Picture 1 (cartoon, one colour):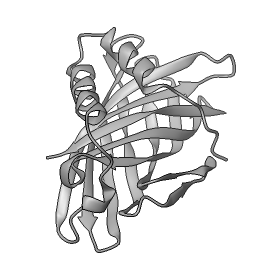
Picture 2 (cartoon, one colour; picture 1 turned 90 degrees about the vertical axis):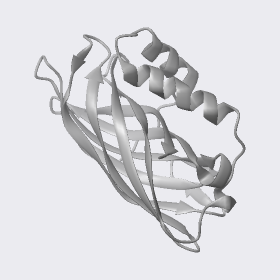
Picture 3 (cartoon, rainbow, N blue to C red; picture 1 turned 135 degrees about the vertical axis):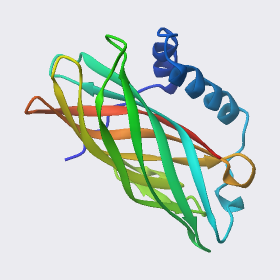
Picture 4 (tube, helix red, strand yellow; picture 1 turned 60 degrees about the vertical axis):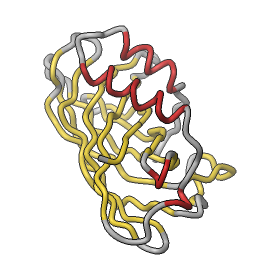
Length: 193
């Protein structure tokens, strides 16, 4: 069962900024700046061809006390365009742990993604909301302390910018933390290369 956790992109962006050691936080904020100035543009997507989107995923796993483990990783996602929209797949790698500023082992696989140029995909966590894309984000991360975080999540969001050059979204799902199922959330930002 997927549990929605509302996270403000600005709050996560600020959290990432508190760790200036990472180029990922700087890159994430640069994409957010582009997104904030852009208009929604799913209807402007190409009708054929491919594109690669590169960006960042800020991901949080919440334990039963509400405390979170926060990670940031590099997104590499491919889109194959059709008249209806696009299929999406890829991966998130090179995770870093915000708590100890250390690398985190593991990869999240991005699969079964769909992009709809009419922006009419219904959000399963909030049926009154519609988005331009959904993509599954599943995999296991292991921090330096040996804690495991098995994510079963979905990224949903919108296409913005000229010719659909930017993707922005939220993460919703579950994280099994050392064998205990808890909630997961986060934000996503990527640009076409």
